[in-house]
Image 1 (tube, rainbow, N blue to C red):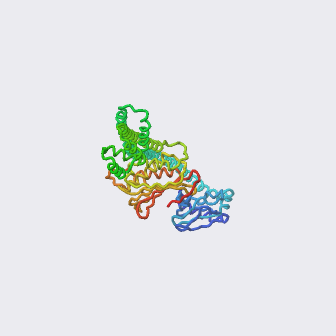
Image 2: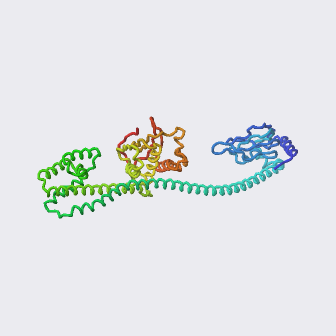
Image 3: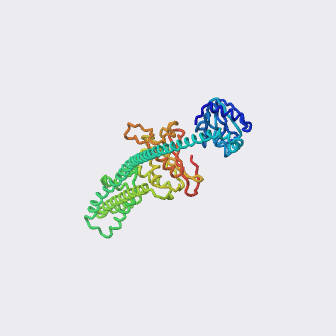
Length: 489
C-alpha cells in the first residue's frame, strides 16, 4: 500500500503532538539492522521515508530475502499482538526514518482512542490487504514451482531409469565379454582331455582285438591281468628319464623294436626285472608270445588310465563351472571364498599358463554373500592382472582372516597403477587400455562392477602399488564367523 508522503507527514505530526503515544522519530542508515530474527522487540514502527529489506534464515543459517517494507507500512506488525521473538530480520536498504512507539501503547490507544484509530486504522488495513495479496501471490508461485518441480522430477526419473537401463546393458555387455573369454577357456581346457579320450578310444579297440586273436589260456590270465594293472597304475615319466631307460633296455634287448622298448621303459623297474627274468630264464616260444601279450595288455592299461585321467579332468572342469556359475540367491548364503577363487583359476587356466601362479589361502574365508556375484569379482581382478602383466609375470592370490573380516589380495608384477589414477580406475567407463586395441580394449566397467559388488556385500575394494613393481587389489568383507587370523602383508 502506498501513502502520499504528505499524508504520512501529517500522521507523523499528529502522533508526535500526542504525548500519550510515546512516539519518537528515529532515523536509520542503509545497512542498519532494525529487527533481528529470534530477538524480542517491544516497539512498532511506521516507515516514513526509506526502504527496509526483510530476510529469513534457512536450516543452515543462510539469509534469504523474503520481502520489503516501504513508506506507509509498519515494521513489526507481526509482533503487534503476539509479542513473540521476531520472525524475520529487517535491514535498511536505504537511509530513512521511522516513527516508533511502544507496542503496548499502540494497542491501548488503538482500542481506546478513536482519533488514534482514525489515523492508523486505514494504514493497518492497507498493510494487511497488501500482505494478504502477497501471500496469495506466493501461493500461486509455490503452486507453479511445484508443478514445474513435478515435471522436472518426472523428467529426471525418466532420465535416471534410462541411465540405469543403459548401465545395466553395459554391465551385461561386460559380463558377456567375460563369458566369451570363459567359454573360449573352457573349450580350450576341454579340448585336450577330449582329444585324449578320442585317441584312447580309437586305439583300445584294435588293441583288444589283436590281443584276443588267439584264445587266452587260464594259466595266462594272471600274467595278463598283472600287465593290465601295471598299465593302469602307470605314471607318466619325464622325457629325459624315459629316453635314458630306453637306451638301457636297447643294450639289454637289442632285438626288441623301438615301440616295444618305449613301452617297457614305462614299466616299474622291479616289475620289469621280474618279467625279463621270466622270459630270459626260459625263452620258449610260448613265453615270448606271452611277453608280447603282456606288453600289449600293459599298453591297454595305459590307455584305460589316460581315459580315466581325461574323464576326471573334464569332470573337474564341469564341477568348477557349476560352482562358478551358481545362480545368485535371493538370500545371502554362507560361502568359503576359496571355493570361488579355485573355480575361477581352473576355468581361466588357459589364460594363466604363461604366468606363474602362487596361491596362499591357508585358512577358511567364510562370508555371507552371493557366490555368483563374488566370482565375477575374482574374474575381473584376475583378468585385469593378466592384462597388466602382458606375456609373463607372477600372479599371487593370498587371503586371511582378521577380527570381524576376511580379506583376499590379487597381486601382479605388472607396471603398477599411476598414482593419479589409483581412484579413477574404479570409475565406470574409465580404462587404462588403449581404445584402438580390440584385443584388450574394454568398456572400462570391470573394476567398477567389482567395487560395486564388494560394497553391496558390505566390504571394500582398494588398490595399492607394490614396492618393486606391480599392483595389489585387496577385497575386505565382513566375516561370517570367527576364525584364525593372519594379517595381510
